[in-house]
Length: 170
Image (cartoon, rainbow, N blue to C red; front, top):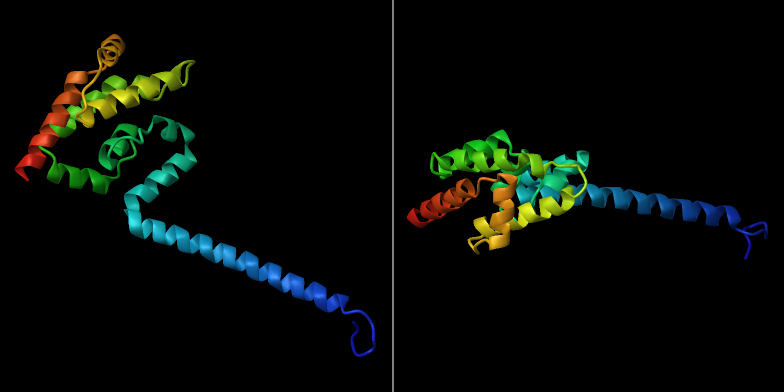
C-alpha cells in the first residue's frame, strides 16, 4: 500500500502505465510496417502501386474493375507500370494490346464519368467487361447498352479471343 515512507505508489503506477502505453504504440507501429512490407513482398510492386494510386485518387478506385485480372484492371484504369507493359508485350500477341486500347478509348468517357448516374454506368461497364473477358457471354441488354454508348464490344471480344488463343498455344 505504501512506499518506504508509507505513502501511496501513485507515481510508480503512472510511470508503469506510460511505459505500457509507449510499448503498445511502438508494437502497433512496428506491426503496420511489417504488414506493409509483407504485403509488398507477397503481392509484388504492381499491386502495391495500384493501392497507392487508389489511395491518392479515389477516382482511380471508382474506375478500376475489381472483377478483372491484374493486367486488364490496371491497363483500363490507366495505372499500368512501365515494367508491366513490357512484360505484357512479351506475353500477349502483338495486336492484343491495340484491341484492349481501342476498348479503353471507347469506354474512357463512361469509366471516368462523374456525372449523375455515373456509378450505375460504371457498374454496367464492369459487368460487361467481366462477361466478355471471363468468357461467360454478354446479355442482349449489355450489348444494347454498349452499342448505345459507342463501346467497341468487338475490340474487347477480339482481345479475349487473342488472349485465349495465346494461352492455348502456351
